[in-house]
Every structure is written in C-alpha cells, then in structure tokens.
Image 1 (cartoon, one colour):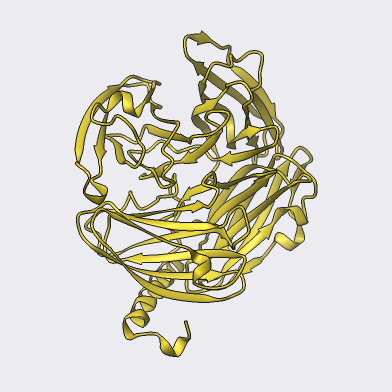
Image 2: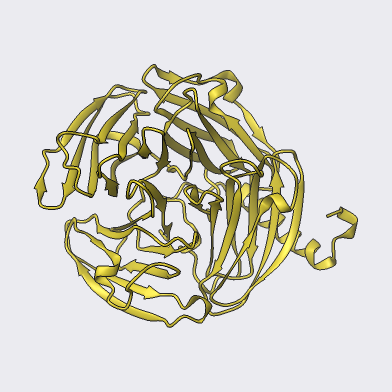
Length: 452
C-alpha cells in the first residue's frame, strides 16, 4: 500500500503501534520467567500487543500464516503491521469478533523472504499463533520483546540450516550480540557482534555462515539496546521447526510428551552457558516401567545430548515424561523426528494458564497436563466457545509430579479436534504439552500458549 493512500484510521492505528514500541524502548524491563503469549494480560486491559517472527516467503518450508484468536466475549480491533527483511512495511486494520479467529499471510502484505508481524489490540483476550504450511512448525506469538534469548540444539550440518528470525517491535534501532556454545566450546563470531535491526524491521541471522557444519549449537542473544522478538528456525532434512527459546538458563526443565515408539528419534540437547561444569540428571517416567535416572556432565561453555529414543535403557512403549535437573543453569531443547530429520522444541515454563487450540485443523495425537510441584494442585479446564460451540468447565485434582491426558480429566471433552481449551491452576506449577498426528507417533511436538 502506498503511504499517501492510507486512510486516516490506518494512520492512527500505525501511530498506536509506534507509540507502543517507543514505550518499550524507553523502559527496559527485566525478562519475565517465561515469554508471555497474551494470556498473561488482563482481559480488561485498554490495549495489548503481540509480536510474531519466523515465517518466510512462498516455496519455503516455513511459509505460512498468523492466526489471531479472540477468546473474549467482546469484538476487538487489531492494528497489524507487517515487516519484511527487505525493509518493506504495510499496515492493516482487522476486526475480530468475539470467540472467532482470523488468519493473515504476511507474504501477501509485502515482498521479502522473512517476515515480522506486530499487532496492537484495543483490549485483552486476543492471542496469536504462527503456523507454517507444513503445520509441523508452529509457535505462539509473544506479548513483549526480550533483552536476552537462549536456544539450544541447532544444526548447521550439510542438509540442515539454522537461523535466528528477529523482529524489532520498538520505535528505535535494536542492537545485540550473539554468542554460541557447542562441543568445541564458546564462540562470539565478529559478524554477530553489535548487530543492528532498525525500528519495526525484520532481520535473519544465518548461524551456518559462521558456525559451519556443526551440530547441537547453543545460542545466546544479548540485547544491548532496545528489545526484540526472536524465534529460532531449524531446517533438518525435510523437517522445519520453530524454537521459542528461553529468556534465561534454568536448573530445571520438563518435557512431558517424548515419543519412544519404534522408529522415533528423540534427544535432549543441552547447552551450558556458565563458567562451571553442569552435572545433569534426567528422571524418566514411562508407564509402569522403572528407568534408572540418566546422568551426564557438560563442560563450561559447551553442549551435550542425551538420546532418549532409541535407548536400550528406555522401553519403546509410547510416551515418556522427562524431568531435567542441573547443578548449573542450562538451556535445554527437545529434538524429535526420525533419522531423516528432526524438529526442535523448547521446554514450557511452569505457569498458571495454558491455551490448547487446534490451529492446524488436524487435531492432536496427545495433549497432557503435568504438575511439576511436590503438592497436589487443582486444575480447571474451560472449553472456549469459539464459533458458538457450547462452553463447558470442569476441575480435577492432579497429584504431585503426575502427567495426565487432558481428555481423561475433562469429561465434557471427548476430542481436541477443532477445540480450544483453557487449562488453568491456582499456582504457576503446571506444564501443558501437545503433539500433532505423525508417523511415528508423537514426533511433531508443538508448544501450547503460555499464560505466565
């Protein structure tokens, strides 16, 4: 759209987006424990923001769309700005009715090969998810930028590519450094230092240009000025995936749905960004089998992996639940797939609220809720009446450390195909995990929206 042809309404909406970015620039907030997705914002808020990055142009495995969902009972107006890595920008206004969803394809707005999306909503209750055309790459859009971002498990081997998709939601340029951790130790490539992204611009950083033909790479993005939205994009053979990453290393991580079926490949990939050796213990729970905890150590500033499947010590009988504990804060990811290629996913941070929604229309092969605490917790399930479906609510007790299928606890829900369910607890101790239908079962792991 030409600048001189914009209507007055779109000019005002663009000004709202710029003002939100300017405020984020002037006040540098510390990172939250988890990147919020919009669920953490009160439904009566005057305005909210959402930022998405990671989608690419047509003829790419990560070509796709952003789905905006209004889980509130009030119609919302969304000011959307799409930016491409070629410096192009476009602004649109979207009306989103109560309990409805609407999709946009960023590549239909401007030309380019990578896209960032910023959205300002005139109230709360709106969340967003980016979904690649292949469906396997899927990630929640963030409600704020970050000043630190960590990811692990990236591959730049022949047949693979690893990039950082970066969107600057603020009104001034953002500047950051990128460092990496691998089996060869710490690296801070000169081209990745003092990297700048303009106001409301999109950029792509190709890790393979500096970290050549390497596997299991950990990454730290340290923002020196402003704040940014970051998604790691991994292409492994035919498999593409989005990694949401973490705002800080942690001494604990949970992966409740890890496939161990025959033919599945599953690995924990862990980077140690600290100056001390990290001693890691992984507790494995799978059916009625007893599995001796797996242990390994990671030298300072290096990375390591633990094979979950295949592994002769872990029965190949279905889904395993993993709880990782480390002597030093580490960055963990789960790599799942087959010998042809794997996708990466970040652990969910224990929170009060998660949203499970069938964005792909394919349903789920599994959807579970885990109590990460040492005390029982009451979990409430609410079926959101999207498109006039019948609402329903139920509660259940979840034992300490237990992982249960959502459909087994929520009697009003016989399936998750085409459904949107809010899962909440009184304390930030639950983790929700979902997998898409796949062959082998459970190797396409997707992140549920996290409400903090």
